[in-house]
Length: 226
Image (tube, rainbow, N blue to C red; front, side, top):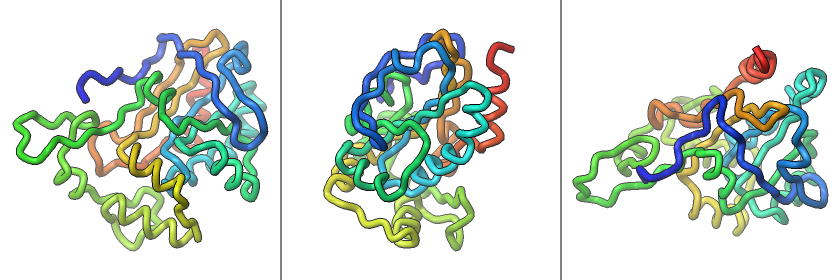
């Protein structure tokens, strides 16, 4: 709602975290990453096909970032056991962390929309408060894979079917609890300070699942310290 923490902005201190790693055993903490810059993306869970595609894009840009001394981290809203099973078959070089409660999403101020009850006199304030009608009216086709711009949940269903991705109980639980979680990307410098912030769909639900391109991420990393 309106009392949500706003997204962290350049110049602010990045919060610490410690999360289970999905593509290897063990945990990764903020302290493990300190001393060198890193890009970190906070995503919905594996149930979101657009987020799965963004993690794949991050894997593609990871060698360029690593050559520039920048690590690549993705946090997904999926329980670790489910994520480890998925990424055992689809390995990624990205440091992939699990946060089924979205606590780090909230710590970095990545918004999650709350639906106003029917008949509410409270004014919508996207992306924090919205109406079901506003969300249902959204039409997206961010990757160009859909036959036409579709309602976001319909787009999810079509792309999951295209990918052969079947939601398991853990995925459905995340979808039920965090369906309106937005996505945010941050660049953190070697001193632990935010250097760049990008938040999904700040201008409205029609731009849901439009994430930064590889070129935008590389450019942000190149601007560190400038």
